[in-house]
Length: 232
Image 1 (cartoon, helix red, strand yellow):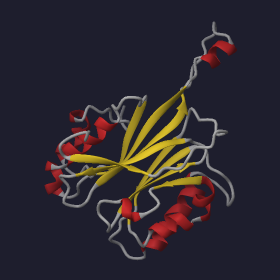
Image 2 (tube, helix red, strand yellow):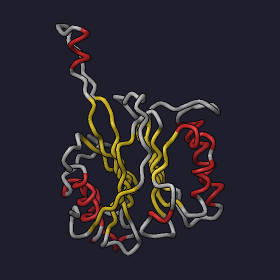
Image 3 (cartoon, one colour):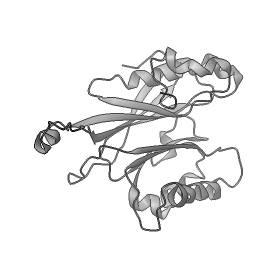
Image 4 (cartoon, helix red, strand yellow):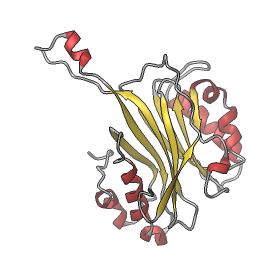
């Protein structure tokens, strides 16, 4: 069933998790709108990934990052090869989706990169029917461990037993742009938020380019029933 009358979901082929991969209890999330309208898209995307590798995660060539999820928006079809061919990405990340044909708007779309240290359970695309710009969200379900805080009275073995594996859903969203998009953005975010409430999802996060450019957008999360992770 569609999460709302303004959207519809479709599955995306996702990588099979390796059985030996131990789910992490902590991971980082980074989001970046590449801007498909600017020139030299391939070169700019390649440079952005270099910056993320060397300046954000401080990884040398060949070094794997700590568990993380990278959310990219406005990837142009001509820029997608820059993601797929980047040595650091090829070595250490799963890419969802790997083909621009998965996007509802073939001029640009969202790409989610999941470090291979996090098992990917499944992935799906949420297409916003009320978008004049082909906007959408990419959702990935990740297998992670809950962290348990041990009190002074707890034994080490008991603390470990309280940790369990759960599914966390991450949404890479790009809401409608420009002032006239104010009518579409609340419904788009509400549909995205509903995806986090699906059965079997322990917790979730919706992030990306919210296009929060007007005063009405400041509390758009409240109407969708979401907490603002930036301020909370």
